[in-house]
Length: 261
Length: 247
Image (cartoon, rainbow over all chains, first blue to last red; front, side, top):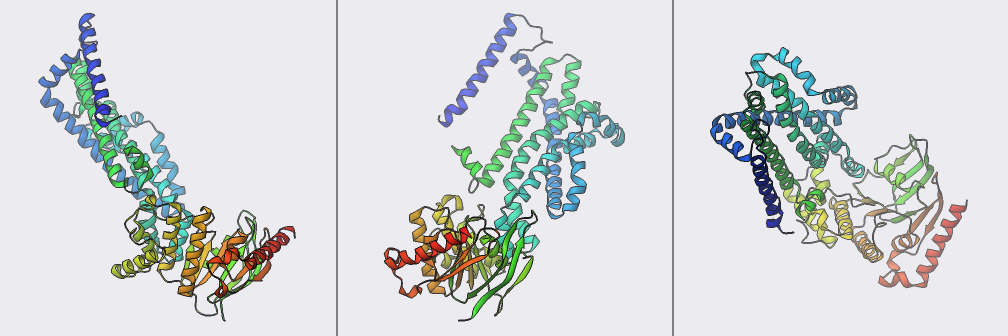
């Protein structure tokens, strides 16, 4: 299948579904507060454009900051784990606890600790907690799964720990890290949304809050527009990270070869 | 001829309780091409690792009558770093030893040319065939001009034609450089073809069952594989291996 068709087919399907949606809502006279027609959503999008964009920017900013901090923290801790068995044994269980505790359950606590007047910081923290673990787990695996013979070769030539880390373990971990980043990029967005919903307060101004407000006020067009924007953000993050992965790996890694075909 | 290295009562038992090796004694003369033949799991690889200093023996010692020489190591797998190009893979020993980049590049290029891969400096490992990858691995091992080359079943995974070509190229490299080669294999024919001395090891725990001198390499030419003398030498090694397995 050629490239044009691979894009054209899903786009055509999407347009067909939207048209059918529009027609069905009109045919059955579905109330707007139950299911708005695509045209209502479009209208809301235009009329609330300023608010929606501002909220998108807030959510995107929180997601990106949480994601970058999760990558930095995850990689740093993974390097520490790879250097010291003791540190890993001591800390890993707590990293898992952080991961498995549902973020919705921590949200109210963090809101109290960090403060209602600082919801952005709460959201950021929660998004970071959610996004952190995949990076840590994948990078740790990547640092450790180096070919034993290559390590022996480095030792034979008297390589230092630093040389083994930078020339062998880190490059080896790169595909693992990028895989983890793809998961955690999506999770950072989910974390940012869930945190904002759970913390639920007027001082937050992200897309999730717009969604909450619009639903409460039965502005379903706006709610759906916010939802669509959240999807768009998720898709953008995924494609950006896929592009990064391809750019970094395609010359040498098998996984990137298959993407091409 | 003086000994380059002497193994004295080397024995190794792994943490798992497997008594892998020895005790063995072995002297390897400077400039020799010695093969170690034995069944799978007889501790051949363990012996090479002990010599390379990658594994500590439980008892015994490796003695270097001269100073400890620069060592090159070739594994059964090419063991290349997939994320760097061929040239950087070959340059690795020089990079780790801190050789200036320009000099390291020049020496790596020479090494690549010597294994027949001139022009492949900028290829990534995944773009090369199995035989070419093994050539890169050999180029890397000789890049730092080792006096001792340790090879752990390097051609076992290759097809017969590639294997024979690499056997011949290896002999050429050895003659030109005058390095000492210690070559582990489970192929009787490969060991007979390559070496001037074959050490036969018994099944686990590996001990030296026979030490067979072969016709000096000067007497060999390209047709050596087809001579009756080659056949009779191979039969000798084969017989010794059979006896070692039965013992």
